[in-house]
Image 1: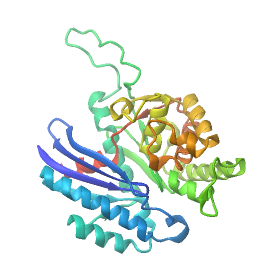
Image 2 (image 1 turned 180 degrees about the horizontal axis):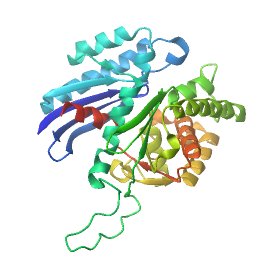
Image 3 (image 1 turned 90 degrees about the horizontal axis):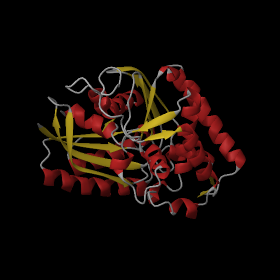
Length: 336
């Protein structure tokens, strides 16, 4: 058993997981899992630089996380940074600040590395539960278990794991290992800033031409991803990150965000379409009133939901299995 600390710093949020990892059983026991919206990628698509305010928000979260890591006595720490810090001209400022606070060098990983870590985190449980076909496990008497409840997936290989982040989306196809992976530059923050911001403010709600332009951008990115990753060959679509989990929370009509209820929930394509259409025609106040909505996602959730719906339309997936375990868990396993 190894006590590890994993930090995932993306375009929109920075997250911490402190856990005990047991490679022998394939289990991660969470001690602390939290997220802070820092919007590190604020303006990066337009300026090519990390904004000073965004850096300070991120460093404040790092100071909080450093105290928690020390409190829990983690033996190993890995800090992984993704899309926004890959793209920024001044990423050395970011690297230096993180190193000064946490004592480790942040790894600004490639999109392909990001995809592999996400795949490991998302599917390790699924492959452990259903190592071959995803059928219900046999009992010792020879009978099968009762059919699983609606929120429990019965996954079948191959998986298509999609991690819809703030600046990029990762696509990975595989079973017990990765077969193909690709990262493309569409994410909820990037699409919002590129298509829905006019004179410094998000259009609320977006216009039909804005939505059409955003949709065209997403479709072009899917074309690019499909050159590398056989998107249509997967039998189970697994969706990760805040846009997907928020869509699930809305579909479940949760009175508050509930990770346990969301993890391994399943949302049909028809329901994703219904939610996406509502998000894109709603006002800021209407979205903010959703009890499971994180305040930091109110302005970007419509774009994130559209990315998810476009993926489901492209692949023909009739449902998405939603996972709360993602690149953060993959980082933790890499330390174990």
